[in-house]
Length: 234
Image (cartoon, rainbow, N blue to C red; front, side, top):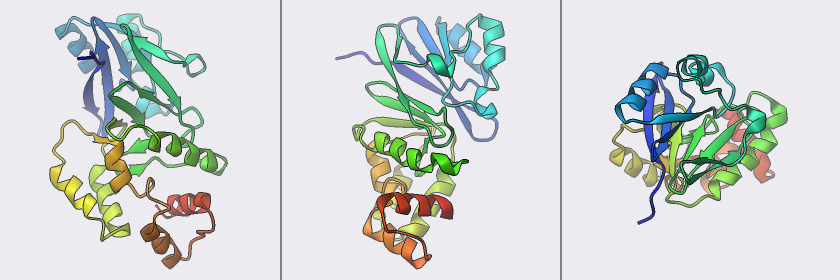
């Protein structure tokens, strides 16, 4: 059986999620907003921190960087240096997904993807600049094209609010109820296949959501306008 990169999820603040990826004796921290917890985990499991990474530059995701750097000597990897990486001998792919911010990225292994604020369970992140809206749709398209069984680990736990919104938009979508009934955190996760069934932003060109947008008087003339209209509503 092929060995994989392991992942540990940490919750901090109210709903932020940090991650530690590890294989062999090497570890990589992603959005380490709870550095003390991460340091304890490293020590307990005899892991050596090799990299500090961030899914994007917003403060709630980078606030632990300086503390972790001070205590380990590991300098956070800058966004301009981000390319495909390794944990021990296993690949950690960088997917550039601008939209929530211009510098947003996701980190993918063979069995999971850490999506930061690009993709949440049942939703996506805000788009703060209109100039990024069209490229955000392209970024979401990159994630939709990933394998259905790939596990999704998001940057926040907004699951309850996102599923309530999804039911409001698609009251006849039983997949949302099925997912909700089976959902049993921690950890907070879904799969790409789940998102295709429950996430309105993955389903924004479905007949049901187009009809919802039309009822709200929104532009549905193109796939991009459907995406833009839905993002503007929520």
